[in-house]
Image (cartoon, rainbow, N blue to C red; front, side, top):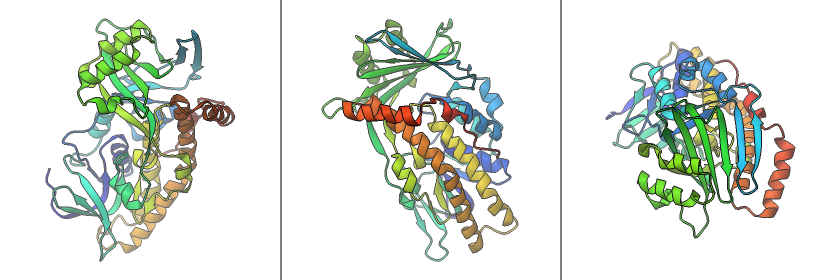
Length: 407
């Protein structure tokens, strides 16, 4: 869609989970926004996404949880299997809600809950700058046009142009990559309602039932300097799948190998896992003027505790709740000429960042330590990580009891 030079109130850059959730949270509070999505269609890459109890509380606030619950089975717990010694470890979820959703179901449900015209597809923001006369943030689009906004919220992922404008440091890669996909069992599977991980020496296979006929799986690989990274081998799903099968064939149970071999080819994807160090979240400024970031643009983390997506939805709730008073105070004014409002929006974003910071520090610390334990970090560093995990995160599901509050 071609967009001419224009002025709008609230621009949300990025139409992923966090961007759509933020637009919906603002809509529920009575405020309109425009979501600028660079792709020609809504992005649903990544296959499945685990939503733990805290994420479901946030989705309830957005009014979409009931519909989404109909698409996925509740998970009863988790089980880790170590094939080299035959040991198993069960993890109870304590009755707390957890489900694995198809990412496309979540994206579609959020999008369909928004007013028509909220989402602009094929609209890529390539830079952000401040207007020299008004100091309003101005988005430069890929087609040469510009959008001047009073409020800009960057939900544009790990390569965020909004984060670059604010001065947020780039995220860092784990020495891990992950291949993901779905497998359909037309006659039903017999895997039960648990999240299973089989942990080998170099690879880990995870399996989560979505419903009785669909399973989401992932394979995480260690990446070494001289070793091929599946994310660099090819963008061809068949070649990615074959690479993955070769790496797991000898070490893992035949039912796991068969699950990947029979996966839906179009669902197979790969990604290099990335993170933002917890010490950066402690000190980083995530606001500049009336511009802020949320989701992966703010706190990309490894998938090891299933909180990346839910943390972004929590961000959406807190942004809307923090921003609403400033927006309501200026509701009957035109968007242009609101110099006083710029200050109030900045204060609202400071409140949002302050409320989110320690929650994100704890999530990022836990996922950072788990990532170091999965990659080839050396025995001494792994020993330190184990001590820190036992000290800080002995309650392994504490992060799911968090409540981001009412919208």
